[in-house]
Every structure is written in structure tokens, then in C-alpha cells.
Image (cartoon, rainbow, N blue to C red; front, side, top):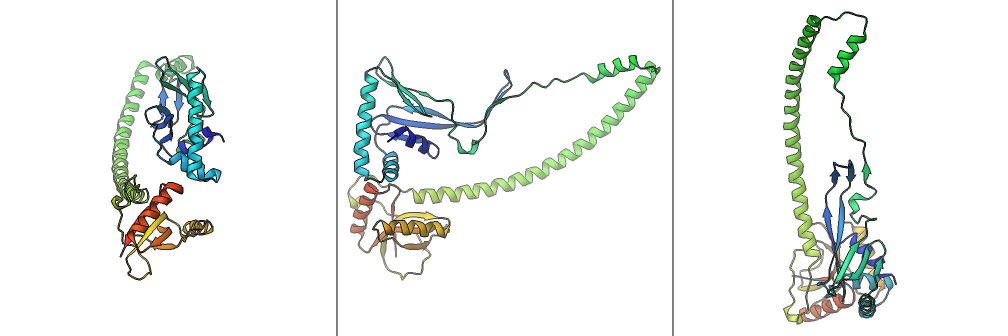
Length: 318
């Protein structure tokens, strides 16, 4: 079991991956960079760092590895605890822990873990296939000197008066061309501003809807007595009768075929999964199981979050 392999996979999708007992690997977005001194261009990337104070288990890495390895959540947690102890023992012995495509860990003089990130991989998926490159500098020629030198070499006699007259005509032409270009650029700028404003409003509206959907799907219930766990009440578009029921939601999908696939997978694993319908955001909802008693639903939710998925949440409707 290569732990760094699973950490690297999660870093493509998340900005924080906690290894229980060791610390958290953090990813921060950095925009594209142009180094004018060396004419080098660098694409947008994620910069990796490490925080040794974030050692508490958040369930992300354990749940992901448990599902990938096909074992229970508790067994995977025990394995990670053993690996964490082995890493700490190696660090205190003065050795370095090299994590492929991530970096290396070592211990400083004051007994703190130092992380040196790898520079050969970019975890920003939007920059896939982009690499840094060096561009040759642009050398601009002084055209006036070239024209004068060419005139001196030609067999035609070009007097200073003729040259001055030609230059005056050229300046007049450039003046009117500049006025025309300014008018065109002003019109294009106004049209582009209107188009960008309209696009920005559409993007802001879509982003707001996506944030609301994400907050609904990623509702997290912390360790507390089942009575204190919160519930979320939504109006669900469904053909069911108006009966007070509590559902443990496994996921909400934009496409119906993905919801059906998830439902079949859960049914094969023994869950009484069913298709619940669509919510007001148009997402197709799939359940682990449903209950008429709220206390039983909360107890079952706690068990699913502990053994199956931390992303499960409770929906109650009338």
C-alpha cells in the first residue's frame, strides 16, 4: 500500500489532505509567472506546503483508501496509525522520508517536521499539459536609420527637401489613421465591456448556484449525541405521497444515469437504496436508506458516516 500514491491523487481534487498523526499537505493556487530577466514563462500551478499542527483525522484520506482497498474504515484507520508511527520513528532516527511526486519529509534541529516539495509535477488540473518555456527576446529595429542608410546607397537623388515633404505627408497620413484606429478601438472596447459584463453576471449566477449545491451535498455532522445532529429540510420534486420520512442521502447527481449507477452499486452492497427524485437545483438524489423514525435515521446516518462515507447527510421532508 503506497500511501503517497493516494495522497497525490487527492491533491488533484482537494487543497488539504491530512495524514492522521503526521500532518496536512496543503495546496495553494499560484497564477502564471513571467520572469523578465530570463524571458521564462511559467503556467498556473499549485504550490505544496506542509502543516505539522493539523494531525487530527478528518476522514478524507481514510475513507478514500478504505474504498480503494476494499476494507472497512476502522481497519484502514488502524493501518494508517501504524504507518504514522513508522514515519515518526524514521524521522527521529535522522532519516528522510521521500514521497514520490510530492516531496520529502525530514526533522529539523528543534524536532519539527520540515517539508521540501517536489518541483516536477503540477497538481492544478486546469494546467494539464502546460510546461514552462524560455522565449527569445524581441529585438526592435530603428526603421528611420535603416531608411536613411538605404537612401544613401540608392542611385536616385533624394534631396533633403523631398525627404522632408515625404515625411510631412507620411505624418499626415499617420495622424488620420490614428484617429480612425482610436474610433474603432473605442467601439470595440465598449462592445467587449458589454459582452464581458453580461458573461460575468452569468458566471456569478452559476457560481452562486454551484456553491449552494456544494454546501448542501457536503453537509457534515460532527461527533455528538444523535439528538443534537442537525437536519436539512428541502422541497424535493418527487412522485411519493406526502408522508413525513427521513432519508440518508448518498449523493446528488446532475445526470440521471449517474444516479442510477450509484443506486445499483449501493443495492449490490446490501443497502436499501432508492431514487428519490430531483431537488430544486435539478440534481438527481440517491439514498442509502429511508426511515420514518427520526432517531433511527440519525443513528443510521452516524453509522454510514463512520463506516462508509463522510459525505452522507440527512434529509427530512413532509
